[in-house]
Image: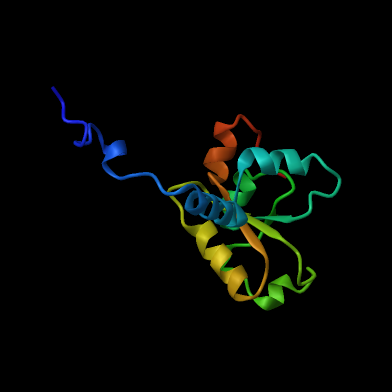
Length: 137
């Protein structure tokens, strides 16, 4: 007979967070991240409410990018390259996918410049996984 006090798997090994802690955690997570599906749906509108930045190299961007994305490699995100955008412009950044930290680097640069930013989790890999097409023009 199993002792009820002994966890039976890794999920039960650590107790879940109290509901208030979970609310705070997931609300914070959603304040800095979005997903491919939500970006896709928003881009169907005439004014999605954000600028989508592909922060990969120009070569990778040209090979295939999310429609309506602007190419701005993360290393080139400085105040002067953002001058055309009002200070309150929300940027959504993405890179190749979960194996790439370019979107995190871009988000950090934007945040350090005082710009609102969210990361599109999954990047190009996630976009394709959802069955969405990439643009090449």
